[in-house]
Image 1 (spheres, rainbow, N blue to C red):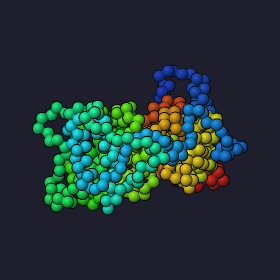
Image 2: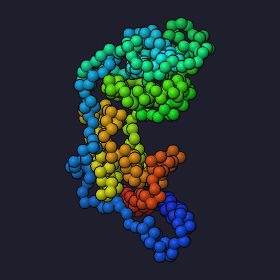
Image 3: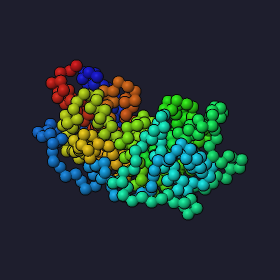
Image 4: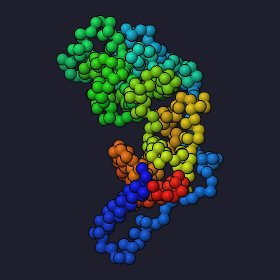
Length: 423
């Protein structure tokens, strides 16, 4: 979008904000002097400040509670469960029938969830090729068998509903296929469903509870035949029990899942399937600021280091230093230690990774970026970035300050990219 149009949009937002401020203070019968003082405060000069150094090249020591490095195999030498690819689609189909029988209408045990994730690890593409590589022995140096169900604790009891079949039911169209075709199709579908549960590591229960139809409708796009199941999604209470276990009670499975995600990241097969089922849902957890920053780079056509410079001020310097670490170090796919880009998932396994970029800890920074995206965006999705919950909860004074900050940043971007000429 042209610089002049961006500037005009900022002016419109500021005019609306000032009008809203007048309404807020109207009931207080303020004097003219008090109104002038408030107006001066709201419109006081704000950062960003000009910088005499390039923060991208700055050597810094990040706070101890903000981890800014994550090599692919920094999570190594762990103990986890023994996951292997099944020897045949028949074996997958038998395992899927048993696991999902328990998932939907039986007792969900700790071992049920482990077996579910093992099914996810056996996800296939349309040519029946595994889309996950083998488990890396450097990451899981010790593996143990999946515990026997009889010795395992129950996470969710059997539903007390009579007359309900034990297991997923099959569609009428699926019954019309030859037996061998049905086995292959069910094996594919069981693994497909299982892989969607990886989302539970980051998605809330209410979100996951609503994805059943989406899973069914997208399936033919990947595999070329209709989804074969009915009644394949558990109820909310059972989903909640599974998520609670994944979040709080399963370190060995969490270790195993890091190895599974690495096996997926290093195998190029089925990327579109993996992106849909889990990858786009668990990458960059809680890092809205990174997504917004990346959108600014694209919308304003500005190099990341120049964007860091024009945004610079002491108020958000720690966040900019973390952003510099992402682009300078973490995103370097040509470096063998970062080739798989496992840092995308790091916040699932380490809460202090890029903690100062977590949206709730950098609301002002995220709001500045959101305003920059909002005014330059051409599509409705990007224009709606101000509705991000943590941003929408920001106080009105802070929002106004962030808006002024973003407007000044857009002017500095124009100066840097176009010599200050309005386009």
